[in-house]
Image 1 (tube, rainbow, N blue to C red):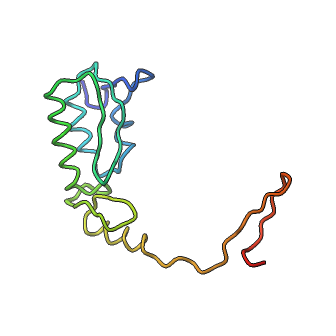
Image 2: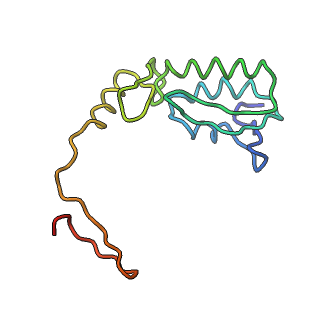
Amino acid sequence: MKLTDKAINWQGKRTWTLDDAKSLVGPGWGKLIEKIWVSLPKDALIEQVKEKYGTLRFYVSSVGQDVWDVIDAVERESGTICEVCGEPGKTRYDMSWYMTLCESHYHNTHEYQNRPVSLAPKAVTNTDAGQSNTKKEGE
């Protein structure tokens, strides 16, 4: 069986494919998802796949300790792999949310997040009797 042919139950509602699991995190962690995927038994129940506090989280039930050991190791490894490109990285704590990024993606993301806030007037929406009127602050 090819890696991409395997489908796993997801909360009993449908089956997940490898691409489904990979789509929930950045492309740089695709290989990490594959490491977990190949260790899952056919009757595994995937609860959730996500990034949390800058590292991968893979929640699953109906698996043995050997699978948990793989998941734990991969989750730790994700703190050293750029979520964007898969190159070596580290978890960054000085942005508006924690992310594990390589130097290049860190600088690009950090510059974006720390850009000056526009001084243009904000739009304010007033709702009165079900009608919406938009005006600029100070008008």
